[in-house]
Image (tube, rainbow, N blue to C red; front, top):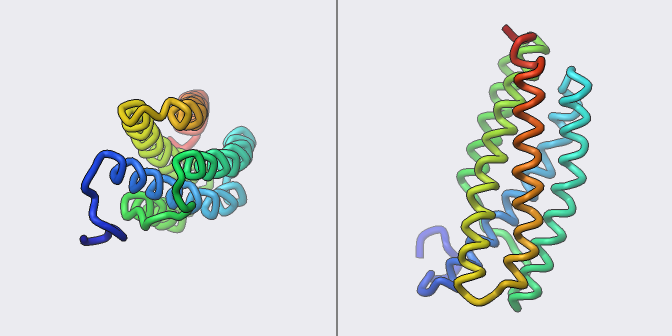
Length: 167
């Protein structure tokens, strides 16, 4: 069984496991964002992180809704990928003495988080549709759209000023 709480024998089992994975990941992100908000120097980046914290909290609620819709217990399973991304972000933030370079590092780490979330939500939506769970897919689609929008905002902040200031 490895890291899984039960064997994955069907697409439904995989859907639930992936849902538990992203639920864990979103909760870890919600715990990490306050530190990033505190350390961000660029006002637009700080504001973007604050906005995303609120979105993340709403995304967690939507995931809980999907668990209920699918008749599953709300729980997470350890996500080594997200733990690794967040650990690397914390290390980089700690290693940057220049606040402008730290902003660029945090922005880069935040985009790595967004890209992971985008892949997970896209996969979950495809699984939900295949399982005939359009109701779950519709809720997950809301999270996916927010993640894509956040990624675009972060790209804009990076290109507009943060990366050039770090240079």
